[in-house]
Image 1 (tube, one colour):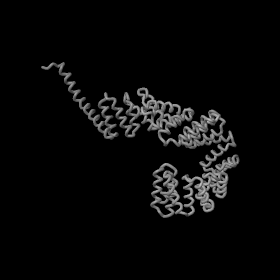
Image 2 (cartoon, helix red, strand yellow):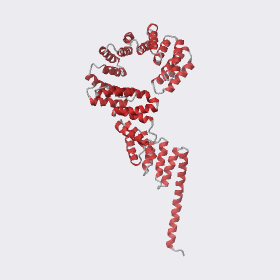
Image 3 (cartoon, helix red, strand yellow):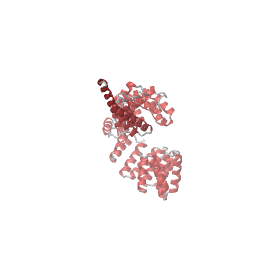
Length: 466
């Protein structure tokens, strides 16, 4: 008779094997399936299979990270975060994907916490890059600067061009004397940054000659606005106000920058005019504000006050002309635009504005609009804005062949100048060439889907090709 004390363990082992081994086999089957799906980029199935595998193979805690990576690659950040949170440890890729997932959900606070945790284990360029982006979302520019500097320290190839450019932008506000090194390096590595870098370079050089520290930051802030870096522009103007809280121009420019970011900005503009009622800069920026609010009498009043302070400045006359136009007083508007050309007879811009006014409103096209457009082109023969203004006047006055000739030349020489494509499309419509007009309008819409030119093309397509 078999020994009873040996039979019981054997039975238990058999029962354990009968229950446990199928689970293990199923777990490894799910793991293999997950690996196959992941390799095939079927990330939804891969994440699910990894999740099933780790539940069947609980000692394979690393599979939670793999499930998280698959979910992240499937653009399912919430699921990825859940899976990463179940893993006891993460690899470099895991921390990177976790930070990216939080950023995908616009949760910069959580992203920063996760990325800082990852950096305790891995001194990694990618983590600093994401950390810089998270700080940028919070307008924490000093922290972003530190993250970018660490990114460049670790990048084996010396850093991507944009990192140098972004660091240079930050330094224009934080440490202006150090900004040019990174900006010029970015410009030398990629010519697309050169226009913005040259704008910033000129502003930095100008600010260095200004004795007033507050005004130096105003100069830099304006340049940052010109290159569409309005968050940093706001920081520069706020720094200018910190240096001199009575700097009216700094307050006015801060109001303008806030408007550019979708904020109101009126409180800052009111503070500016309270500090200096005679500043033409303050008046001009308030004029822009009232224009956006479609309060044209107030807009006109601001430009009239600016012109009273600077009667020989043609810009104020052009602003007055615009305000009168929006109020519907075309006679007064024409007089203001003509006055601007009298004040600056050798500047193409004001002749072009006069021509455009005539073309837009059908006012004195032959005796004022056309000569003004031709004068603008004579003064600036390579300016696409002057050239398409001439084309527009030809179109408005019914000279379709002339308009087509001019505008074809503009789109050939300056293919990225989209207004000329729109005017050419309108010329084709006037000539009955609907197919050519349709091609031009669809080109503009596809090239600039989110911009003003794209929106104009969209409206024309809707109107003429419903």
